[in-house]
Amino acid sequence: MDPATIGLALLSGALIGLVLALVGGGGSIVAVPLLIHVVGVSSPHAAIGTAAVAVALNAAAGLAGHARAANVKWPCAVVFAGAGMVGAALGAELGKAMDGEALLAAFGVLMIVVGGLMLRGRKGGADPDVRLFAASARHLMPRLAGYGLAVGLLAGFFGIGGGFLIVPGLIAATAMPIGIAVGTSLVIVTALGATTATSYALSGYVDWMLVAWLVAGGIAGTVAGRFAGKRLAARKNLLERGFAAVVIAVGVFITARAL
Picture (spheres, rainbow, N blue to C red):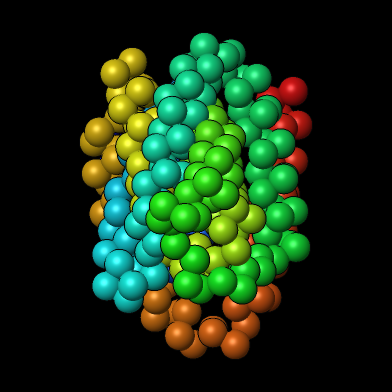
């Protein structure tokens, strides 16, 4: 990798980390466009595979803090992630078999949908004590597995973490509060990202050197984002809406260009 490409990779990683720290999600949805249009990765499949590795590593790093704060419903996460990994494996195979330009067009449409969901905002449920055990399994397991499979298919197909899809899915399935849903989602994002990354890596679609530079930039971006987030806490809604508008605009651009 030449110095210019390394610099662009560091910058892209920093932007992804900054978004994750400021908005609390959405970093993975901008990773693929950054890799293609900023870093210059020519293959959409390679961009998706490389982004999937970075997504899994970022989620695993963020999970530790939520686990220490007891914001993770582990049994619910395991069921959702188990079904999601099956979906992600299937989705990754479908994505690799699809024409690169058609895949980019579909990714652009997904960005528009995700941006719309972000504009609507996220509301949590009202049951902080929800848990998966023998008495509740009959009700919760089919819902968790169903949402997990559907989200996993999309995450594997597009190489995204799927946090903005997983969080609403967890809330709809269990009525858990949003703070707990966000913490629990990181277990699932890690599992789905690792599944997708493994599938693409086995097909030679992961640039490991690029992953290293993205992660290095992501660490710096996360630190900066946490510092800025404390200063901009009162404007979090404005930040989320502004980022949603950017996601929609980029989605329109990618779709139009691919078509």
